[in-house]
Length: 635
Image (cartoon, rainbow, N blue to C red):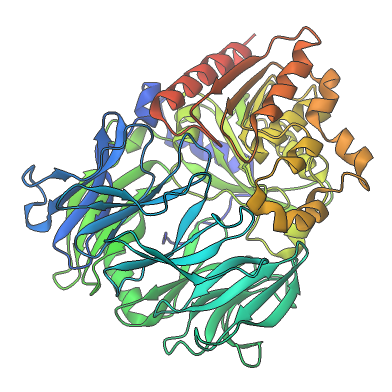
């Protein structure tokens, strides 16, 4: 979680340009590309529940693996022990399970069929707790008060749905804890680890199911159209009621108390007039909700608990100018791992002793790059052609006049997600190479209420794309962008927006980079993973119907409109991507090659939806750097 003071969005790019010129005297030092994307020497610090052990990840055989060290030896090289030896792919995250084990998930080659894996700290033994081929598993509840068991979900029985199993981490034995009746898309546990809720979806309608005890049958208590949501954030301290984030009957999601007996939102706990509430945090040690998170331009907190507020205020006083995020805590919540970061640095990690109110620095996440040489990410906003307020972020190259610059337009993936403020190595790398970078939360981006989200329905390649184009035109009008040196680069939906941009507005961009991007609306909808099938009807309503919207989907499928493309294009794709399958990129490239147009095409056979392995990331960014430099150089 992040915490910061308000930073008002700048609505005039001329103000941004003025501040950039006056505050920055000389261009920043140019850093080697690999310094931006290399693995950290140490990161992902975690505390064992009893506080006796510190965990962290660092490279082993060029992959991030888990190491541990006795807490009393922190600050020295003594006592460090490697726990895992993954050599195919990085471990993406992990946590302690009791004092003796760590748990993590891994997939194979990027296929997203994750397995839950346990490593014994003492013996180094690694055990796959869900050794089921072609199955996607995840941890439902780590059961922090039970050192021997966890709750996992997987789709071994039926690839379309997920059952819950109680797994003994010491023996590997798994027992069915809750069988999916066929339409449950997620499960909900209470603070005691009891399976008390579930959500079903038939594609358009969603229902919240509840039971008072695990001996009872589930009963549907709320049914909503998918446009509305009643999402359980946590049970109350006594496990009898719930806190829900709901937009039922309103535009912005807010936090409410909720009685499952009456199935009605009760006391309004917190709402924000401009944006949705998106998270509730909980203290297990004190058994209270601590804060509500929301984001306008930066992430903000509304505190519900005086002790949590006191802790964060103490941390902010010690780390002024940085966003503070508590990443791990001991079971008694007396010792914490604290991250301090900003838009210009991934920052440092600290060990915080609550009683002593003392910080001990553990590591800089990227010591190779000086924070002072990085660029500011400034919140901005502009108005779409049909009157919507589009919020986003503009990063200007440091020390260069904000006038007539080469620009990278960077639409986010999702598309039902959003860009936020903070350190992004891609953005800083591009800025360090002299490019201005514009990120925009086009219609459909989440967090801005139902109306803004629903404005994206069946608008892929249409008004959603217009919002991106309007951002380009805004930059040109303000004099920041050189209209002859504008490129567009995005991944996933952002890759689609890249391809859509060079078909819908073929004269707007001088170069384009599509990274695991959708190219054909028909084949994309047919190739979704089996566990997305229950949501297919909803996807059809949000994206379009093959039968009813055939003409529109044809017009908005870049691969079917390749004859309009004249922009130089670079395409990158993971061969094992289960979301945007390789054929999406293949058909785009093939359509252009049939016209005699050469396309730079990079395929990595051991990657999925985005490149995970460092050597593949280096290859991609090095190729992109050369591609952009070639096509955005001054005439």
